[in-house]
Image: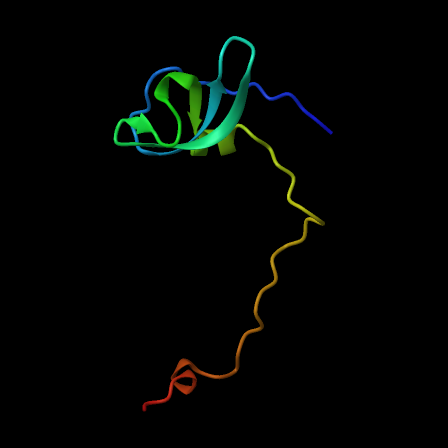
Amino acid sequence: MKEEIAFAWNTFQPELEGLYFVAVQFGQNAGTFDFIEWKDGSWHGIEDEYVIAHIDIQSFKKQLSIKWPGESTPPLRAPRSEVGDSDLWEEV
């Protein structure tokens, strides 16, 4: 199943270093999306002029509503131990 997602893209240079989801354009009719690092004032692994828009990873995650894989069940909790904290360590 495919869903179209419209992100709130940014077209200016990022202010913070980190990982970004980017729109990359190669020529007039070719492009792709990718995850690329912005560091030291440039995109790493690609020429800057090819990146036409970006969104930081935190904003990327906040704009998605992703269903967790499998059944939605509460996390398992470890059973409470009857042993005290002092019994968990042994001096060597």
